[in-house]
Length: 395
Image 1: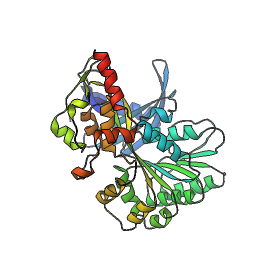
Image 2: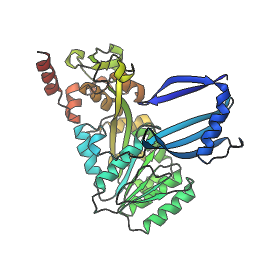
Image 3: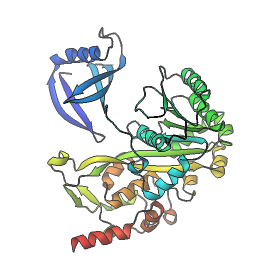
Image 4: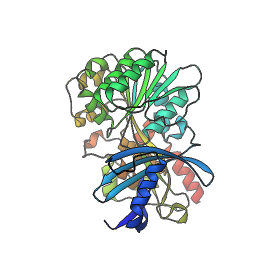
């Protein structure tokens, strides 16, 4: 009401940094609009634009969103380095067994792969890492985005002027005439768009896109609500990659930490001895701005929809029922257990996993819960070897 706040989202967490007199609010908003070539008359309720600038000798791309609120304009800036490089699949954070399985799925001859999660979960990064993996010169890759996020050498990338379903479908029809092997759509925003992508997959293309959904089960519920999806899914290979970003514990101030029993219980691991794992947490230091964390990495839940899951989806099940069916798929690991393995490795803390990963209600009977050894084996995490190395270091 009476001042301007400036906040930064660092590693996914919003931190207050400074405040200024209210008198700068209107000049600040007008300056931002002018730089982004937006309307400064004050009539628009919502505007989006782009500013290319040079800051400290580095070229940056500022994605600008301005929204009218009861106290004036709220400005959100997403900051991208013009020198941002594509990531490799190995750098996303998948545990070894999941990475091996996903790489095989990405190299299939056809089918639809969806990256799902909330805003800021790293879906586009995973999409581009997959395209980068496939971009070996033997595949014709075509992307349709609004706007194009990263430049992929050797790919044909189209900037989509509109996000409405009719415009997206028309763009995909144009793409099909370009003899593509791989088609990537930046985001699914309507049921009609999902149908169009399924049609592309049925024609023998490898299709990739992103979808806003909480987890794999929620994404399947959303697809199940599309009247024609069941017919498509009966013939189309479907892979869903649910993901989140967790913060890495700061290497400078990371300490062994014993989680509370209630925290451990949330992860539903059977016969867990807390003393068998050196869970870690940052204490906070100047290097990490007192947060205890520096940088982020991903946790992933990868599900392949095979014949058994297709028959389940025909009955329009709930998300809980889908999760029960997914747990029966050999090698499937939930986001919750994927995050738990990250904490076992010492990469992050259990508390930060709980901050971003959906835990739902307790859904697993005691006898169905995996043991720590089973989780580590399914993920390819060498728990015993890691603990032995830590013991040697302490000695």
